[in-house]
Image (cartoon, rainbow, N blue to C red; front, side):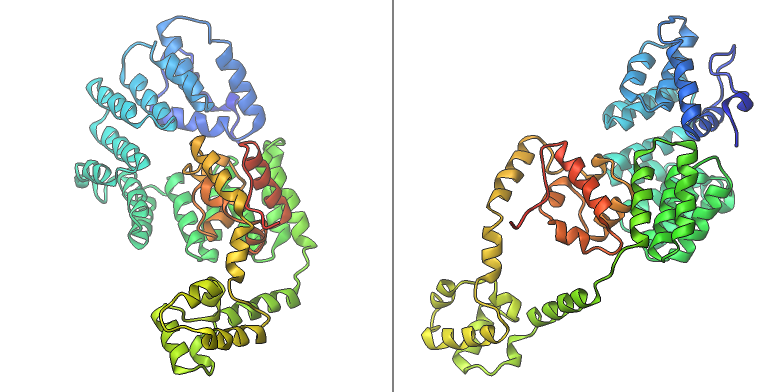
Length: 436
């Protein structure tokens, strides 16, 4: 594994490293906890120095360490130049200051940065900001680099994913890798796209390629571990996590995942419980037309758009009786059908009434500006994030409206991941929905 001493890139030397050297330095810095600590000590030793070149190098170093706000403050004091404005834009983008990032990229172009590089970074910035139209326009300006630039095809694939054009995105990731087999971001996102699309074998092969050809790539190792565990290969999953912990012994997600893997080895699958749950769902989906009802009752239910037994659980007796031509006789017919299945009218409504505290909690979350924030802001482990994706939960507000049982019902989601989510929400003064 490359170490900082062996990389031979001096951030504070007579000549500023190139953009490619900065990327290589970043990979090595984040390859282990010890490398991060060594690099942090080097950066902090230069924080108080005021020489122009040192201020610029320190600002870039702070960006590499993920200290984005400090990086912006330091870079703004650095002398103008393409490196200053490029890294200022990168830091502003991480802080979601997208307009400022675009302005910095324009300044980088004026300072001599390569036009294609600037346009591609502008496309990425617009994509992060959710402005896919502007991102597409920037990429169109680079269209003459089709089948020439791997980065162009990578950025195009990321945009196509954002637009839901997954097949086209896969094709462009592949093209990027044909042009530059070492393009790690293209390889990682191709593996992740295969993972999300259910092509586990292809995802595993691509993740294996990443971890074999690079210093410790934490996200790839943990995603690979999740896939191995999902197919019951607990030992390879454990090896992946151990590789992360070997270089990052205090990595919180890896430590959580290690516990999750250990618990998965002894996880008990209650087949009878799952069979009962499946049976209950089948009952609720039973169409009303399967039962013998009077013509009057059948017509009324059809006009009310009540098609299944489950629909009847979401309406009260009073609502039924308030409908024109629906009387006590029809009501008795309906109640008799439900009683045969140990159900009753309004059962689902009663469950909803038990959620009375939910509205106040959601309002509080909204007041704090949390409800619409993405769940990615919770910094959850790979397993937890994958479960939320499967459950189509994208915001913190949606997560707060989910019960523990719904999360635990997701395949391979265990108590460790549940506790992680509860702790993350608790730190914000929020919690999962409770039916108690």
